[in-house]
Length: 233
Image (cartoon, rainbow, N blue to C red; front, side):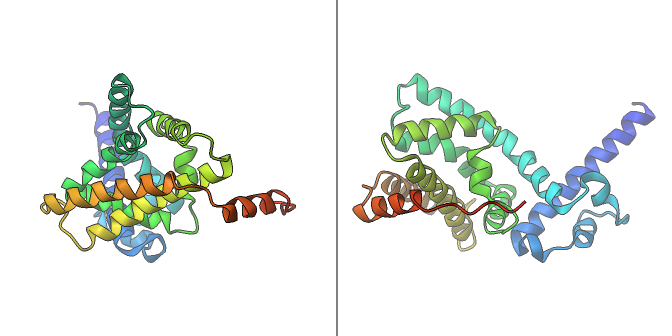
């Protein structure tokens, strides 16, 4: 291995250590409860500029953590969606939800996976990130495909209602998972975990397919007739 290769390897190891350390600390204490200095220390970096060198900012670090984990999860999601379509189940909402979320839920069998789910929940609750929108507009092919299939399965829902329910879906799934893992040993309480996941899917199917009430339709009409404020530049 050349000197250049050795340097590249060391840089890669440092970057990964920073990602893993930040993911753990963010999941435990929230995005704003952790300093860059603490992340450097947890990653074993004496050079306090290491994190800035590799990522530039805390936001870029958060995005790097998501990409580090989500890439593999999305590959698994694509495989499950392929199997679902092959079986002719693309209109089965529960099957779609399973293909969408099981690649993430499969991580519950490891401490590393639980840590990532808690991290995602912290991102969800951070005012600096709009995770549901990030997910719905993601450039990951598995997420994009799953979203399109879910919208199709929801039928004739008004776009505003469908999008809002999809946001509820992401928020409910991640928040519920993170809270559940703080009270259970997900890696070993297999029966309890299976019950929780099955009931979570039941609940999500329930609110995604709930009839739209006259009250909601009226609120939708009033919103459509209300002039929107200009976005601040």
